[in-house]
Length: 216
Image (cartoon, rainbow, N blue to C red):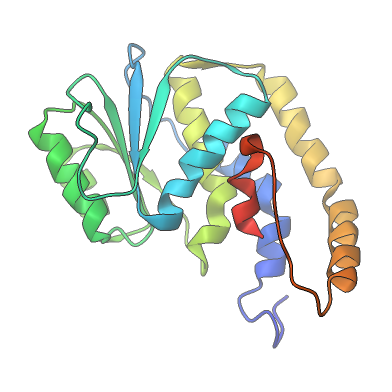
């Protein structure tokens, strides 16, 4: 329930991240070529973060995955990207100028595997018109708080495509485990918040976890 300090109910949204992850995983039947060797993920700012988090998850979970993922936060695609790559283009609004430009460049370079992620906007229209693979991002007052859904959906695309291997039963158990410790983690966060009152906060981490710290 929202209150005057949390008018958009972000507290509940954060606590729902494990369920978001599961919802995202169940949400899509999109697949890309099983021969894919390289992926470019295009999005500006926080729109590219789901790919960073996906890479973090794959690495820490030690999943069997051998595809290179290049993350692009720019108008132009990296020079190496050609028709053999798969392109993911993400913008919650669907109207991010840089992402739309990168998509046009991908089309010029002849990319055949294109996946679009958006809630609405021009990207969604393009996906519908050109029959591109499309992942519908649910309504979120704060798009950056829907990362659980994004990562779950991206993981499912890789699974659908035979590009990653893991036991789905164990995966489901891990989600349930994550849900079960939400209350414990929240209490830890509350204790940290009290001890950090009136102090300057410095967050540091190892390279492996560097993108998770951005949620602080």
